[in-house]
Amino acid sequence: AQSVSQHNHHVILSEAASLELGCNYSYGGTVNLFWYVQYPGQHLQLLLKYFSGDPLVKGIKGFEAEFIKSKFSFNLRKPSVQWSDTAEYFCAVSPTLAGNNRKLIWGLGTSLAVNP
Amino acid sequence: GAVVSQHPSWVICKSGTSVKIECRSLDFQATTMFWYRQFPKQSLMLMATSNEGSKATYEQGVEKDKFLINHASLTLSTLTVTSAHPEDSSFYICSAREIQTGTYEQYFGPGTRLTVT
Image 1 (tube, rainbow over the protein chains, first blue to last red):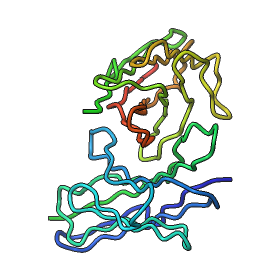
Image 2 (image 1 turned 45 degrees about the vertical axis):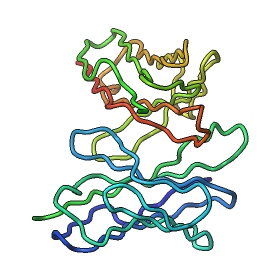
Image 3 (image 1 turned 180 degrees about the vertical axis):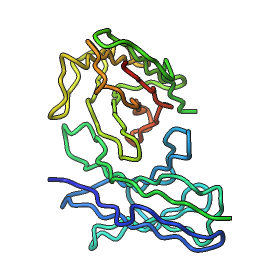
């Protein structure tokens, strides 16, 4: 079965620390990859996405992610986090199957707390 | 652009009653909308996929007679929780997929908090 695994459930960092959140998926075919963020009390927002081309994608607010096909991974990174990055981060994968409606398969999320 | 709204943002109802939640794409057309349920501190659980003009596709384990979905237009989908019970209390989120760009990106609504007493 297709699944998405986020390795870190809770991460606590100090401001200016570097961030890397792991995401692996299990599916052998072509996928579209997403990272979403949910700030406290707010709705889900797209951070970045990968469809094709350069496997290193840059998103909003200084985030980037690298798609490594051989490792089925799409890790999220930010060189220097801020207190305002405190949020829930979700990795999602959409297998490009015909008739699949391109629905998203979600990881369980990572709760990031950044201490000022 | 690409704004999705939900109404109401929160609702409290008595056990046994029905509640309707609306999901609207405000500035784009969406042939497909998705309904999710989110439990506290957990990920999103896809309930059903709603396609305009056709019957919704429900995920395994989701009762289609309890969670009625109607997608009557390219900008509106509704979820009706029928004969609600306290265990239906949850955060319901919809998303809409834009058709023009072909990117299959989903835009999310702010969610509806349902509390059944």
